Length: 219
Image 1 (tube, rainbow, N blue to C red):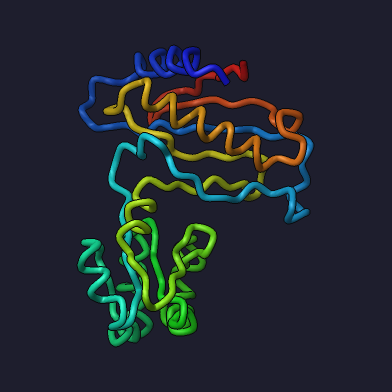
Image 2 (cartoon, one colour):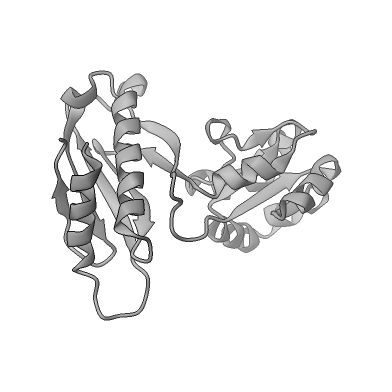
């Protein structure tokens, strides 16, 4: 995918920004072909770091024991200690509010049983359970700072019920060049996860929160 051509497409997309002052998200939509979602090894599901960031805050919370409290404080990340877990199990509304507030949860590995017991019902259905693929399950002695920093520029690219991936690659407050770099990075990453590479790629497009989509070429 030619970045210079993607930059022109992003610039074209940005001409559709309304007079309204809110910042819109730029989504990338990738349609796939020749894959069978009933086969786990043909599904697309991975975490990708955006080189230019998402353009807005990605929130992270750590579910930890006292062993990681100091590390969480140094990383300046919100955290919930083991002794507080039970209240979220007892009050579902608190767990729901928590799941809505944060994009990622880090969990101390030896506490995953308690995390599942107290947060699993709410977090599981919302895709918020700490995921080892994203580096979100960590040993009791860990420097959380680099993990938190990486998560703050990370998105999940996944096929669900259909052979389509839709995910954020930036916002309208970012430069077209930065958004284009994120787009090209994600495109190449998806190709890497497809068994037949470009032969499994039908097309890719981009859109704003409030706009129609614009088709990208694959040059």
